[in-house]
Amino acid sequence: MRSISKGMAAMALAMALAMPLAACGGGQAQGNGAQNDTASQASQAATVDVSSWKTFGDALAAKTDEYNLASWDENYYVTVFNAGNSIVRVVVKMTPEVYEKISELDGSAEDYDAQFAKVTGGLELASAEDITSEKLSQSDLDACIGKRGQDLLDDGFVFESYYMYGGDETGATMAKGHLAYNVTFNTKVTEKQTEDEGKAIKNAKVTAVEYAGGSDAAVDVSKIK
Image 1 (cartoon, rainbow, N blue to C red):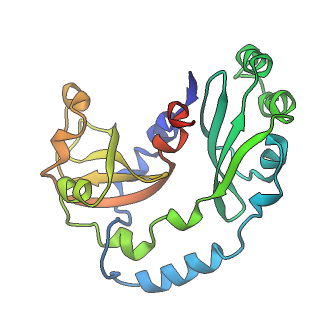
Image 2: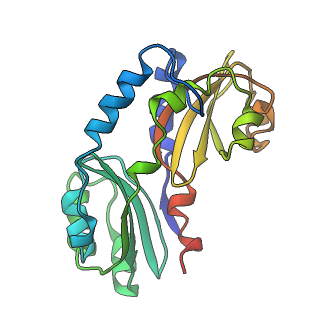
């Protein structure tokens, strides 16, 4: 199985996350959270029509961001990306020939995206869904501040990985459904602790949260039947 993870994108965000950000969870909005929710809902109103997509080329034509989360094997290619104001999850039926051609592409090439689209564009879609509605609102994010890591786990979040550690605060990516969030905690985690599967942040309090994109579970090709 091959994959492109959130790792590099998360590292790029590490410095930014040292600043106060919005948070996640359930409950009432803080400050002007209600106004932000209204604006967010309005921006998400224009959704993409995934029902018209038949091939991976159709889906790629609607893609509007460079960031890509995906994994694939000899049977499927699954990815999450932005299409306008929508967040979409696409499952593509892979063929042995295309699987081999993807492995031969030069990921550092300036025209990699064009090469990739040429190689994979004709693949048939197994499914395409707009998952924008799963994204937590600003009031939900704000309500997570002050909660413990265990509270988030009890609330249905799943620990994925640490992306910021070694300082007075720690950043962990936590997923809920098909989407993930970068959560900052008021505790120090050493490099040695980063393999503890999130134990170090269970009793730590949340100080900030930011939407991070698709979750690892969303592109787990091994779960596709």
